[in-house]
Image (tube, rainbow, N blue to C red):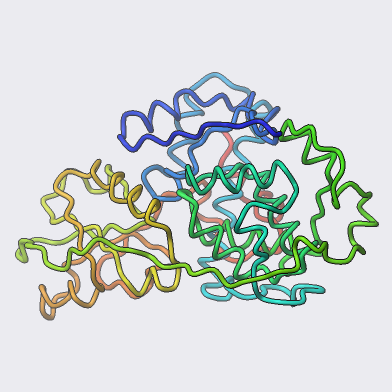
Length: 372
């Protein structure tokens, strides 16, 4: 049996800031791939826009480190920005095979054994079950899962990626979907394969025998294991709070928050309405679990005076008639239909924009803006 890690994600702002302060970027660089390594557990707060990668970087930089000691940590922050820049540049294209058709897939469903955490890869099954309970999965395990689903079970990546996103507190369409595409070869030059020895090493599992106990050349050629042959299409439905009426002061602007922008410091001293907008159309496109919605609404409580509204942006527009400039929001590829004043997000490298063929082509330019 693999190690069990209890994931706890407090939602009060003080605890979130404390988590940044307790981050050890040097230990992170050494042990991040191990299931019990020094992982930051900041991703749910970054994904939900409570904090930014720039904010994390700035806090870390105030401490005494040499750049070479923390470069790997900063690169991991930059990976998230890299994915976001691709989404920003490509838009809905990231929902489809980005560079080429996924090689050798045979269906667009999900193995039943994956949903039921019965793949017979003990560590992966353990962490799927734990994800259902706690809303989190270690990044290395996500790679194992995607490799098994896409490259061993021959599933197309799109539905499995949507299923994983549905359950993750740190769900981010860009990093999630593009990571799946990187693993399966639709956005990279080759597929990523994991073997049993690698899984056991990094998860602390004592499993030795399985259909993954082969060399990489053999894994690339094996037939779909019987346990992974039965497939299904899981039902992914978002249950939103029934709040369709709110009272706001239409003589002052309204700051629009959403599941990707829950920043309590954003325009915090301004006299404005503050509305968390939960759009049915958004969650039909990107469904999430009830656990995720509860996490989002709890995080929103860090924003003084926030009101939750379940409806569409156009429903809020009615409150202001012909004056859409009364709305203020942060730029995000998922919400390009908003109208009004668009604030930029905080970036590690604000001038490094557009699409990049690889992370390291992005990093080569970005690091010039990021260094001390």
